Amino acid sequence: MDCIIRKLEEKDLATLVELCKNHAEYEQATYNVVDKVQLLKNAIFTQNPKLFCYVIDSGTELAGYFSYTLDFSTWDAQTFLYLDCLYLEPNFRGLKIGEQVFEKLKHIGEENNCVNIQWQTPVFNERAIKFYTKIGATAKDKRRFFINL
Image (cartoon, rainbow, N blue to C red; front, side, top):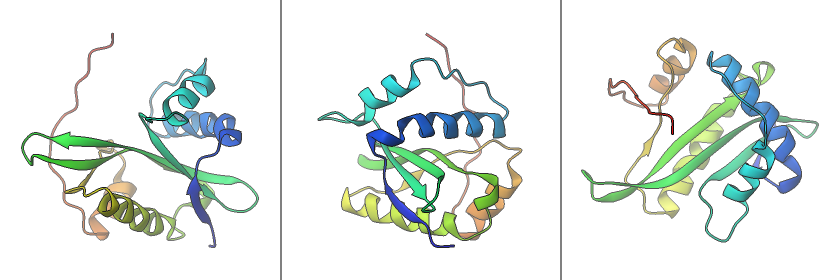
């Protein structure tokens, strides 16, 4: 399928929030849409962005999105690209879009002198795990914890 991977534009923010909501449902998580358009706008569309976001544009709709940050690894003593979210709507899965996304991410990582790309997925997301293994990714078993503030 011919899709365009492009940077998120401000006009896409409301749709991004809907995609985030769909993503959360897919990962069996909760998501509160309140104020998200403004919060994401403040994080992405600023002189020093906290978050970078791209969308997958099918020409008629936004088929998905991915977002990332540039982080620093103490152990590697280098910058890495952290893939925060990657989501495709169900009817766009299995169409080789994921490979295109990861090629774009590799390019972005190389441009930013990143040592690697890191991300996580829920243990029950077997389809994603199979895809990540197929594209040559390796896994480290860890459990993610967080404290709400």
